[in-house]
Picture 1: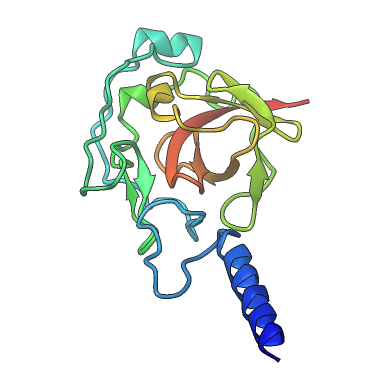
Picture 2: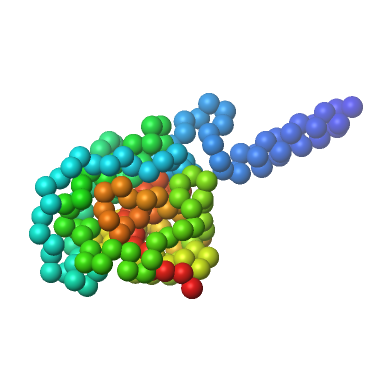
Amino acid sequence: MKTIVVLSVLVCVAAFAQDRGRGGGSRGGGRAPEVGGGHIPARGPAPARAAKPSPMPAAARNQQPAAQPQNRIAGDKAGHPDVPHVHAKNDQWVGHSSGRGDVHYQMAQPWAHGHFSGGFGEGHVFVMGGGGPGRFWFGSNYFSVAPDEIIYVNDWLWNSDQIVIYEDPDHIGWYLAYNPRLGTYVHVMFLGNN
C-alpha cells in the first residue's frame, strides 16, 4: 500500500512539472508579463495627433530614408524594453506617436510592390520563415524593416518567431510588424509576394 501511494505521488509530481514547462499564460498566481509573453494586441495603434508635414527628404526618392542608427525611443517604465512595444495589460502602443509628417516614414511611391492582403491583427498570426531585417518572409509574403528601426530587431528570430501585421494609421506605405514573444514592433514595407 505504501508503494502505491509513493508511486501515485511521483506520477502527480512528474505530471505537474511537465505541465509547468508548456508556456502560455501565467498559472498558479504568477504574474503575466507586462510586455510580450505571447500577448497579441486586439487592434493596432490609434492614429497619432496630426503633425505638421515636413518636406520629403532626398532619400525618399529611393523609397526608404537613410538609416539612422540612434534609438529614438525612451524606456517608459523600468523593466520595459527601450524599443517600440505594446503593453499587454491595456494594448498601449509605446513609441508610435509620430504623425503623417514624420520624415522617417515618407516614401516617394507608397505601396510600390502592392498591398499586403494576408490579414491583419490578432486573428492572423504568421511564423517567419527566414531572412533578416532587410528582407524577411512568411509564406510567400516578403517584407523589409524600416532602415532606422533595424536596431530594434536584434532579438528577433527570423526563422521561427511569430509575427502579426497591423495597418499603420499614420504612415502611408508602411505596416507594423508585431512580435508576440517580445511584445515589440517595427515599421515594415511590403515587398510583394512570390
